[in-house]
Image 1 (spheres, each protein chain N blue to C red):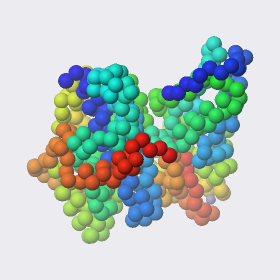
Image 2: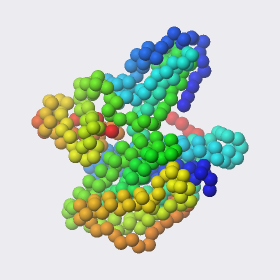
Image 3: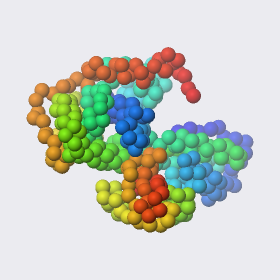
Image 4: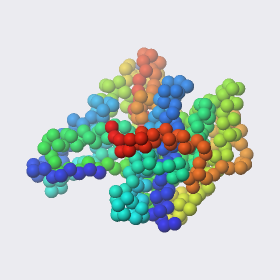
Length: 172
Length: 265
Ligand SMILES: [Zn+2]
């Protein structure tokens, strides 16, 4: 937890919604089309007596992008002239891929990454593979090459229709 | 032993187990038998080291509360950070189980070791999601999802080796026979584990063993491997007594912080 000294700027006029809009510019460095809000990493913004509190949660225990995303939140707030803030990191409740917003899922797909199956589909976590559609051609004739892909949150798949490999954002 | 001291030792051990196994798995990075497995081991190592960071950070905070006099200034703080605990403790101060510190060996041995640990780690983390300690609960809620993937990965490979060629079967069975004696320590509670089990903060290891045993039987059967008989079991890791392998591993892992204290990048 880190707090910086109050600045001379008054932030009395800033509200939580405006800050959330501001933080829309903070992206996942590994999937730069999706914001931390769409990813579900941004858990909340509170403004009380001019003090801003931003709560974030990691996707994975060892997510190497977490420190970067925190720094980006701090930098963005400072650049907007907000000095009196605190970025709080929480583990519980644990992040789940179900928190990725619909717009986030759409952007993943456009970026060439198959969005995660919903965890309600228990097969996704327990072994059997639910049908995964290829982000390139839409075919569900796909197969998993490896449960572990280019980053902690992805698995590696191959499409048997268009022959292209692709990443699946793993259900978590 | 007070509950706070038990919590410190418990949290430290959870961190040490994950850190040491994570480091061993990371030794495959750039050396994996196939690219997918190279990446898988790096990912698993990252999960484990991430868990270790959560545990060691917490351990430092707990320690600062229960023995402030041990701290450099004689006051509450500055506390030992995750980095202090990872890089500035000697071999005898590490209290991980011996299973995780053994050399990675060939890929069959790595898989068998991971499987024996994962099959223990998953029910342990599942139980910790109902811990009365909020922090342990929070760490477990994240870890349990990661460890689910770890166990799935090591189980699949164990079946592939056991039910594969004569050579892969032989290597897997040999590794299993050899590593079996390191599994007893997983389920022999020390004082800290007993104190926390009574307090509802950690599970009874006997309960964890039941689930471990069922998983082991199920996967070994599918892998056509034979469960070794329980014989002499190694122990000591929980008290800081280790095999000859941990020292050199730590020397390598810690060399930068030892040579250039406080270095950052
Ligand atoms: Zn396709």
